[in-house]
Length: 342
Image (cartoon, rainbow, N blue to C red):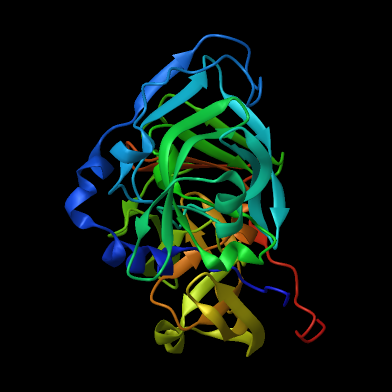
């Protein structure tokens, strides 16, 4: 398989799936999942205490959407922490589906969808709920387990992109929307917990503006101008900038050809890369003259290379993000091989 320079998250898929879903049955997407705080030791794994079976049957789930939250969420009385690995620069966790696995899933904050490969669905004989207008089947998942955190009653889109991919699927924001979710990049840990972030302070805890699809957008300041940027853990680069907005940027090196970008609906497209002449400010942090990837897409994206400097926590209920870092020193983007030597 070709080497991926950039995995653009399922934001592109999201728009298409929204069109393809049976929107007359979208009432369940606005329902709040049932939260069960289960006493007991954390991280007991997918075979721990049996859970109540008060979740919808496949027949009752017909008409559901991969954008819907789970019917119920079960967590122990302390935070669930699981190891996080990286694949093509993206955060990945091991999951169990209906007790089978482990499978490697990308944790994608740019997506609001639960997706897996048709092969997994076939191997596990997941009940098929229908087909959307893109030709993707939807299937019913009784339980998705991530360590001791269990998400019950989900609809998954069976995306052909994952049939031959190294990752087995994507866990989007809808799956864990009722919980605090932390990606601790330096410690390589993913944490799920009940609760909420403290009030925004403009420094490390920031209020975000959701996109139309609900993805978190933070404000980036560059040369006195403000740019909304999607926090997208499903993008592997530092920053992705739309081609349509690149003419107003000043570079000290580049842009040059940057390789290829790929994604579930993006296909494979060419990119450019260049180093900005100015710093970018967000919250209390400074990104020194960063490299940016230029690609023909609508949004500015903050990718996992930049986020890897932080433990980032998403609070969807209160529209807040925490960016925790051990130092307030400016973030330095190492020189690229194509850049002239100093």
